Image 1 (cartoon, helix red, strand yellow):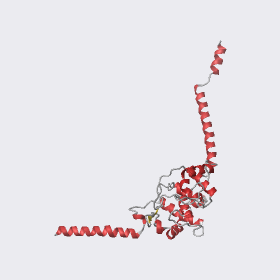
Image 2 (cartoon, helix red, strand yellow; image 1 turned 45 degrees about the horizontal axis):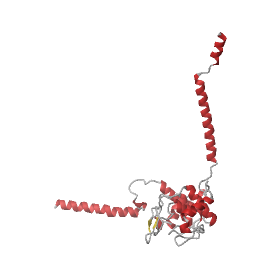
Image 3 (cartoon, one colour; image 1 turned 180 degrees about the vertical axis):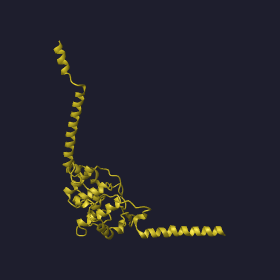
Image 4 (tube, one colour; image 1 turned 30 degrees about the vertical axis):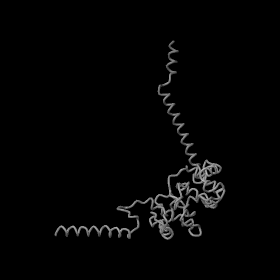
Amino acid sequence: MARQTKRRSTGRRSPWAATALIGIGLLITGGVYAGASAAMAATEPDTATATSLTIEDGKKLFQANCATCHGLDLQGTENGPSLYGVGAVAVDFQVGTGRMPLQMQGPQAPPKPVQFTDEQILAMANYVQSVAPGPDFPDPEILDGEGDVARGAELFRINCAMCHNVAGAGGALTEGKYAPALTEVSALHIYAAMVTGPQNMPVFNNMYLTDEDKRDIISSLLYIQQTESPGGFKLGSLGPVAEGLFIWIFGISTLIGITVWITAKSN
């Protein structure tokens, strides 16, 4: 009887053993999951060029949402232009900024909330590219913002500032049209606008602006977007002309008003 009691006492497990085993199991499971997640993230394709939706999915989305104006075969109709030669990047620009589908006819299509997911937009872009090839998505290096900012600013002033303002703040054009502000536009959509020439904008192909030029311009605009004003009112970021005009109108007027008030009070 004593031997049986001794065996029972030595065969018992500590109450902490189960807790320790559960903890070890959780650590091992968590480590395996973290490793697998990291491996999947490392091999995940770039969403700018890959999507889980197929070209056939893009065709269905196009026919359901765009064919009324652009035709089932992209040939265009009375309500919308042909899409032959516009390319994937034009679809991404127009649909990815909410300009398309068009809400109503007007001087130009304004940006508005986007109606599709990134995957749906990419699927439609790939479909259009497969049927009527045109400008495609650029090398990621062009969009990295690591170009020559000073050179890009000079190129922007020469080629773009007359419409978009030297600070990219946008400006009015004729007949109710306007050049939109570039203060919140993504690098991809800036590139797309340069190579496709949406609405009133000219096309800046590689014969006019090289990929290096485009990279520098994009880098300059991204720098403006990311740089905060050092202080005071921006006044459109137009420089000394706008600042001088502000001082002349408000500063001089204030001084004249104070002078008239002092003179009237003394009399």
